[in-house]
Length: 426
Image (cartoon, rainbow, N blue to C red; front, side, top):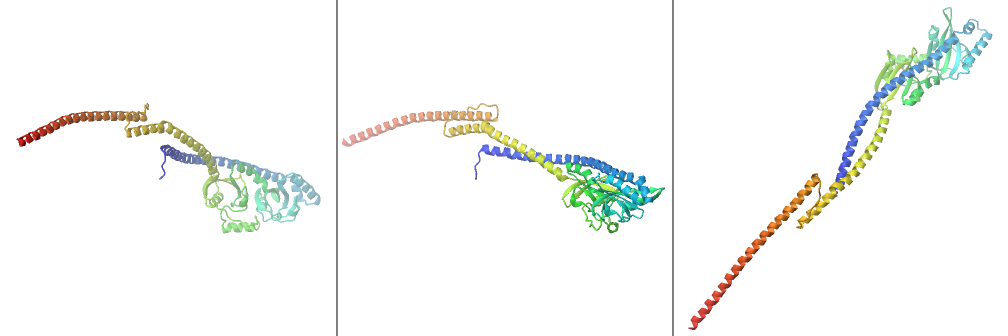
């Protein structure tokens, strides 16, 4: 069995108590920070989501207004009524004046009422019929529209802003501005990269059309119904692209039944963590912003704080252990060593030794008790020695008396023997 000194034992006790208190403090801090930071994170994410919606809406408004500005130009109306080569060249030049300086605009094109592309800044669109597209059909009905589509000709995802060209209350054509998806992505990517959120821009069916998580692009938040999948296939909105499902079924249902911004608490079984998702509609457009924030980032932040605090707590514990070690050595062990020496002296019969410890605490009381005990033992021994001496003197005195009597008896016996001899001689 390992024999530990009292200094080591007390130091280990201080260390154990310090570590236990440190664990309890860390547990309390973890709980407090998780609750506080989660609450603040939810509030911040809601604010960020609202700001992003405004920013994305502003981008949509910008291009919708741009398509309106072009669709209401007199030259567009004149060309649709008189499709001469001269007017076509003039109108194409106007389109290019807007298209070429704007990197986000992929193409500007004009379709007749049958959906046939008559003029386009992208030559590959000319003579292509897009009557099957929702953006054409809505505009042909007199409703400006925007739709995220995987281009049939370009195979490039873009946002198509359509505007009806109307003359005397009759729709005679549709003007379309195709915008690069990057223009939309950049509108919320900056805020998410700063706050660590994941954002998804979805259409009305919950299909992700823009996101800062690339692997989620063109995936549905939740499973599509057979009718929805069939409708998407017929519309060729995403061509033959397979629309896989993500794990956010409840979020998709919130989009399908949207009435107001929602905050959804969700346990992600894939990532195995609690997440908060915020669903917001983009203005009057058929798009929704889903902002996802998880506790994982919060946990990482809390663990970093706990790690820093733990280092400080450990340093404080070590300081206390060291201080405790020297204080115990100075105020307890040194006195115990004195008591040990006094006890050894007493054990060897030296009752004159004193601890000479003068303190107003328990150690002082113990020292006084030991000194009093030694003094009483000394007095007891002196008393015993006195009694022994007195008894010895008495015994010696008695012995002398007895010895004298013994001598007289011997002398008497000798006289009797002498007398007996004399009597025999006579």
